[in-house]
Each structure stands twice: as structure tokens, then as C-alpha cells.
Length: 333
Image (cartoon, rainbow, N blue to C red; front, side, top):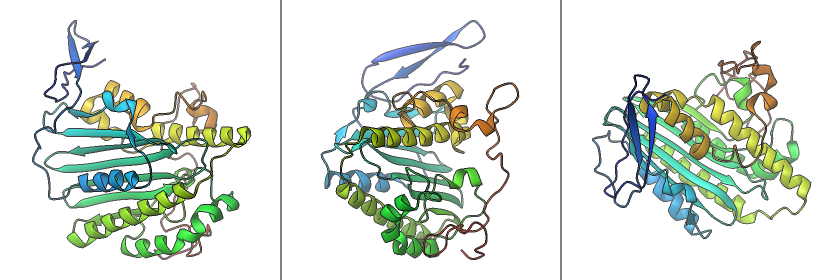
């Protein structure tokens, strides 16, 4: 149940209205409106992630015919419960791209970017992933070409997509060093070139991050350009399940969920997660989280809320300079 009223900003007329009981005999309405013009900007910090989104969209247009996704009609711009925090969303599709989507959150004290590009199941190209969080002087960053298939156990996949990218990864892991503990469950969804870092805000660090984003995205687009459409039905199904497994994990365990729930409430956060940020959960497969990750099942059949069941984490980068997985034996960043 929603116990608040949330209105999406747009100068256009309301296109659809959904009402929810507020638990006290009344109701409040959530107005979904189509954005036609840019909303009035809120006061934000000096850091802005909009240029990251603009670069990615413009660069993609140089490589593919990019069209708005049907999701854009509903998921565009909204203002959170506090009346100050703005969420902006955009989404596209292309012949080889199932979904390119971005969500940025900004207010006077916080900036968030959640950007991802998902290939169509006919291609086993990695998933481009950029998750950035900036608050006051603290920055938390994940930038990666998330592997569709586990690179710890699938050497052929790792060599196919990451062997040639190791110099690029090494370049930026020196500028943006390992950010500390990462759970063993999460590590399976990252590649040897992942940038997982934390830093205090500075112009040099943000310039390095933007440079890394541009180079990583160009590298991903090159992989996509070279990708050959799979015709083997069994391999397409394998790719489809791998992407569905990834989406199912992210939708359940992504650490940014708490921020969304605080901003827009549990019901709208669940809708945003399942139908926009991790769109494909309903379309690409029918398995549930516990089908993929039964170790998270509690005695009553619910999902354990813990991030890690194994309890192991990696304090240091678990890959060496050749991209070989070495666990926590490598004691340098």
C-alpha cells in the first residue's frame, strides 16, 4: 500500500492514473505523464552524470539505428516523495540491443547513475553496466562489461571477450583502485576488467571516471559491432537464461534498492526495478530467484535478505594482470 502521493512532472496532460489505498480509508494517485519538455532543474552538486548518458546515446547512434523503447512512454521523469529529488529515465533499442536504458537521480546532496545496455539473446556479448553514486565527498563506482557467462569457469568466454581488453582494464584499475570487500556471490557477475572503487570527490577522479566510461563503452560497442548473430536455438536459449539469471539476481540483490524505496516507496520501487531497470525478468524466462539461487531459501520458503550466504568477500582485486582469477591471494590493487 502507498501512504503518500507522488506526482510525475510534465507539462503535458495526464495520460493515465492509478490509485492506491493509503491504509487509512483514503487513497492517493500516482500520475504517469509523458515528458515533452525538460523539467526545471533542481539544485544539484557540481557533479553531473548527464554527460555520460549523452555520450553513450550519441556514440551508439554512430554504430546502430537507435529507436526509443516502448518503455519510454511510461518511464521518463518523476519527482520523489520529498518533492526535491528528481529521477530521469530514458530507454532505447536497436537491431542488436534489446534495451539501452538509463536512470539518473539528483538532488542537492546526491547524484546517482544507473546505466545498462542489454544485448538481444541472439548475441552473447557482455552486458554494459555503469552504477555511480555520489553523496557529499563520497563516490561509489561500478563500471564493467558484465559477462553473460561466468568467466571464472568459462575460459573460452573470458578469452573471447576480455583477453584483448586487459590492457584497458589495467590502465583504469590503477587510476581507480579496488574499493574493498565484494561478496563471492556478486563476483560471479563481474569481469576481470571491472572497476569497483570508492573515492573522495576531486576533479581528477571524476575526469578519470568519465574517461574510463567513454573507453569502456567504445570497447563494448566494438564487441557489439563484431558480434555475429547466433542461429543455434539451444545457444540462444542458453544466452536467454544467462541474461534472465543476471536480471533476477540484480532485481533481488542490487544494493541500490534501498535508495529507491526511500525515495518513491516500496510499490513504485518494485515496479521500476522489475519493469524498467531489469526489464526482461517476465519476458526472458519463468524461473524465480530461488530457482537460480536455492542457497538463499529460508525455512519458511522466503528469500534470505542477506547479501551473502557463503560469507566470503574479496578485500583485494581477485584477478591478476592476465585476467586469471586468483581469489584474495593477490594483495595489491
